[in-house]
Length: 57
Image 1 (cartoon, rainbow, N blue to C red):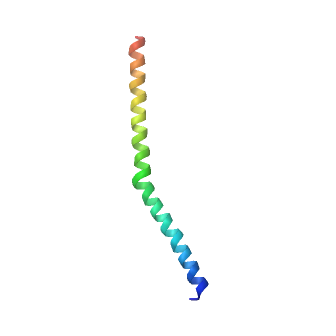
Image 2 (cartoon, rainbow, N blue to C red):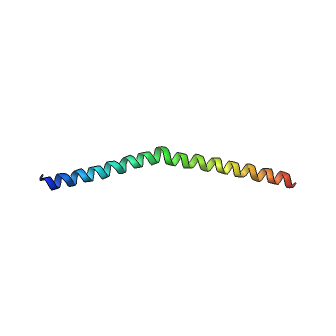
Image 3 (cartoon, rainbow, N blue to C red):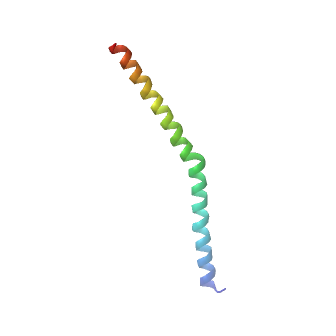
């Protein structure tokens, strides 16, 4: 293996490793944050709609 092949391999491994850890980060932090935020927002909207419906009736 000459130097250019070794540098290409290192570049590939660096990109692959960064992608792997980015995927792990997304699955453990970003997706749960998004789902929990969506649940909380929907709950607030339903509570507000119920409050408006009760005020109108």
